[in-house]
Length: 130
Image (cartoon, rainbow, N blue to C red; front, side, top):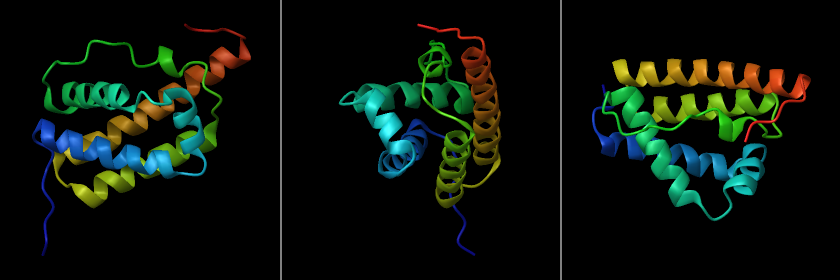
C-alpha cells in the first residue's frame, strides 16, 4: 500500500496551493475568472494563499487578511464553486491523506458554501464591497 504524506509543513501547504492553482489557471471555467482578476500578480496571490492555509491548517498565524471582500464582486455562480471545490478536493486527495487533508477539504467546502451564499446575498441586494 502506497500511503501519501500528511499535511504538516509550509512546504506541504505550498505543494497543495501551487498544484491546485495550476489546475485553476488551466481550467476552462475557472481560469478566465482567476486569470482575469489576478492577471500578472500570481506570486502575490499564491503567497497570500500559503499564509492563509498555513494559518488554517497548521495553526501558525501568518495570515491576517479578510478572505471574503476580494471575492464579493466576482462574476461567479454555483457552477464555479462546484468546480473550485472539485478541483481542490481532487488535488488534496491526489497529494495527501490524514487528518489535515480531511480538514482542508472540510474547510474548503465550508468556505465555498459561505462565499457562495454571501456573493448571492450581495448580488440580490445590489451591495458592493471594496
